[in-house]
Length: 87
Image 1: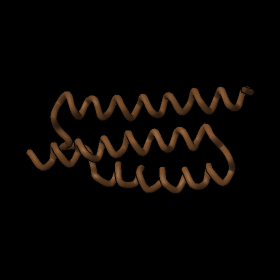
Image 2: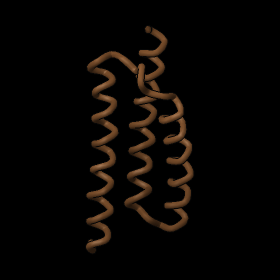
Image 3: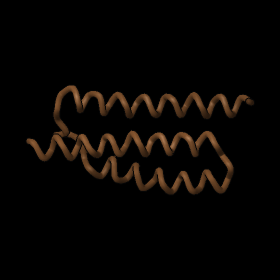
Image 4: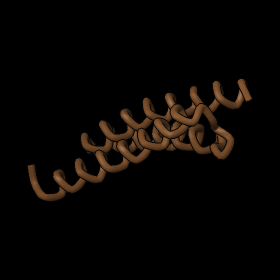
């Protein structure tokens, strides 16, 4: 594993943990008042495109990152829907 791979994995972890922190904050406050559906829908659509793009390039770091981020964004979208519906 070279420097670029390590850099890619590190940046990927930072991004995933950043998004997870946001979702944890939503869950803790049981609120999605300041969160737009467009954030998660846009992230999901771009994630799908980036998975396909990364697959064509055989870039496994970004395939993994974008698949994980799609899961994180589905989770965020679920809680945004749940909290907006109940408010």
